[in-house]
Length: 138
Image (cartoon, rainbow, N blue to C red; front, side, top):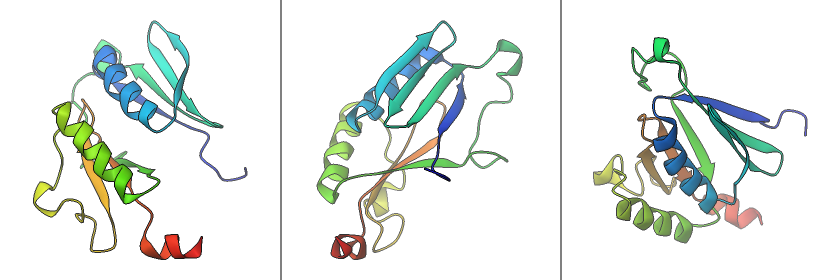
């Protein structure tokens, strides 16, 4: 367990909107709600959890932008390319913009099969299929 990610805490501009997005997406990956309180929620998978907390009014400006110093994006493992394709369809059905649409699903390169999209605060999120090399190691 040493070195594995324990948790990520994300301050969000609109808690309910972020809960709707992240609970759905992370639920698709097997996360479940482990706790909720008036200012936040915790979503857990195994020993790792993601916490969403409402940003205090005094700190809502300037808004988040991934090009500023700080978090750029979160990337999650998919089981397969089929899972990436299925998630892409679900994201589109929910009107979640797919980033780098013109290069999708190879926006990360010819051996990087993924869907790139944004959460309600425009945090970039990736769902990445195992590479062919990774599949051959199994």
